[in-house]
Length: 487
Image 1: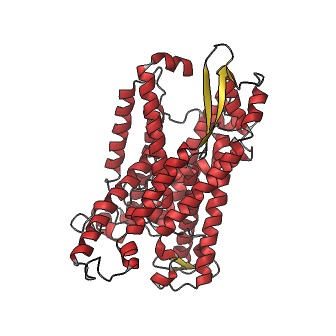
Image 2: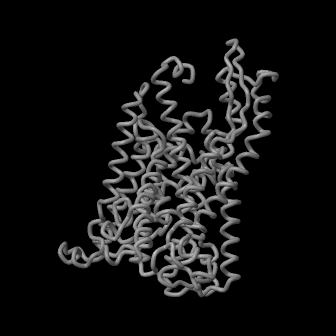
């Protein structure tokens, strides 16, 4: 008996959002999408009952925007468990250890979806329990414990239960948007979180928060209220670029432009319909063929490694020096320091920040981060393409089943696959590495609102694809016959 036969009774009974039986009108899709987005914003502002907010620590740091996490809220875990479960499944699927045919076998598709949900629940526990009980990141409020009479341990379990509910809620919110809305719930939540930080980075002033936005910073420079005199005086280029955040503004605009341009660069393979004369089309192979979403997997893996380091440091008090040394919750040496991604200019501009680390350590860390993002971006892009049926074999079957063929070639799946193999594998690797390079560059130069480079890349790419999907949905609404042609 295989593992599928053993696990099937459990996996097929995993709760799921019912698929719509027919076509969902575009306005209804927008309603569902907007409703779930409002619910997401609401839940990120619902604080965990029993949590000592003042003593709590930021768990994910700048990874929070990528993981759509709300610090200290019921959505503390964000999409982290979903992404981690996807990494595990992709690795198992890539090694062909699952034995599931998710392309052609409906039974295996159901088992895969059930297995993914089960893994998400496991990851919620594996991520949430250490936050509450091991690392001291989310301490219980002693006043609440005394008032309820359940002790500190009881309040800790109460906090974890709320986090568990939040993790399950975001799982089904993502599924609602995927089946009833527009785009992907995970992508939408990332865009929402990053957009908040971008707008805050532009507009925030002390009376609106605890930081200064670009507009307010330049007001202080020009009026001289910052204490350095007018910005056009003798403050120097360094002050204008860094303290005035001109470099962050330039980097943000540059990333927007590069990603939009890269999304438009493509190789178009001509297609024709063998049964309908004159029916022609093109299959685009974009430069960023695998999209920017595989970057979530790379950064989530890095976030989990850093989280493990902080847990070990909190439990052991002090780790062996070769593993890591910590100050204020951040690695300052050892293996975990070298594996920590570059998050800001202060992490590598030693000549400005006066950092205590030797220059060779800083340069080594930069090199490792570049290597991880370039290689990891390419590897996870290949995994993403193969597991989402975007590879040459799956794409060739889709083209053949639609009745299309490549002009000048026989109408055969194998022939179409060979043509696609000339482009898809190479473009996937190049695109994945390019996205990794852009993410590191954005982190090194800084962006508006301190948004991570990966978060900015994801926001631009997801928004662009969302725009394309909305345009396609509107076209289908205007011409119902096209919906029947494309299924």
